[in-house]
Length: 440
Image (cartoon, rainbow, N blue to C red; front, side):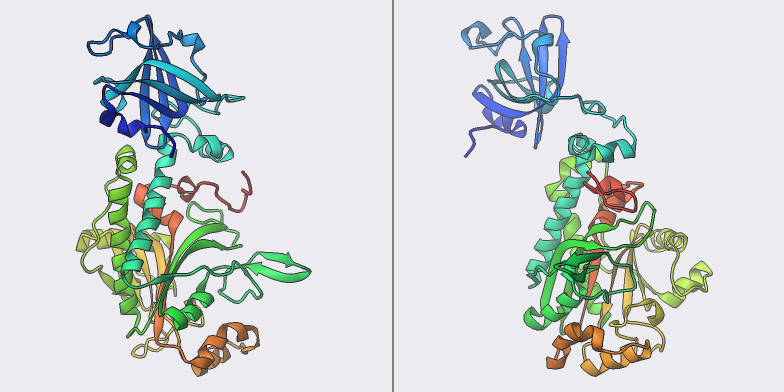
């Protein structure tokens, strides 16, 4: 293993001579003492260099020190290894610092960052941040949402593993553009037309016939020409599908457990990032409030067959005011606004056993019960004026018997943006792909 101490571990090595390594976050010089702040994956550590700084009761001249004037300290963003003696210092990050340091430069930057990474506030516009993402994301404030995102995925996996789900990995290159009404990206596949997958929907349904309960974390692609703060052309989808359900309410119950598990994981794994951003994760009610789509229409005075963003925001405020909940299920969307594989509501013709989960007034999750009988698929396609020819690969699983099943899909970047209060989903995406951006 690498014989290196992380900045967050310095307190465990008080009085010992250790080596830390990372990037030079900041250089400072006060009178005859210089400070070198080093950033690693766990935080910041400070090294003090100067003429004989004290080390407890031990004079520094008895130690192999380097007296580096400020102008000779490595440039910011230099990669360094620093060996020094750990001593308590209330003013240092974490309350401990390295004294009598030896500094080894492992790599030097060829140019300065586009803005100062050591400043507590990001002094750059979003386009500047995105254009220089490989270095901009080193800023603790810009890195924090990605830490929260990673903790969310860990919680998603942990919860579904506990509930008996199996993780799967499905193709992202598909032969036909039949998965939804969204536009698709076409590609040349060895001289044949192919497409980037819009979702793992067809495959996760098929794998429900193998494992009963499955989930996937992976990229999906939507060639929709949206230029908004909530849409991306590529995002990470957290998908789950489960068999032997009664109806969509079983799926909603599992989704509630998943959301609660993701938030618990964020609290446990990403507490420093939450503190840095000043974010308090919401509490998931034991039962998330739910309204039928027709009631949502009445509440928002809407006669449209779908909810507009403004109506979602109004419902979010209503759920917070009436139920004390940041979350709200809207169920029973019209069949005309749901994919052909959605199971209709037997009690309400024209409506579906489908739902959306709103989080702080924005649609975050879409899910529902699916059709599971082959003849129902044939009928559903015929009702939409389509035959089965383009869907033979998909329908194959249903020829051999499938249990009643359903599932959901959650957009990771949108989840992280809502959780952190980001105004733009790109602020929670490492390298966003949208209508205008294809690099870096």
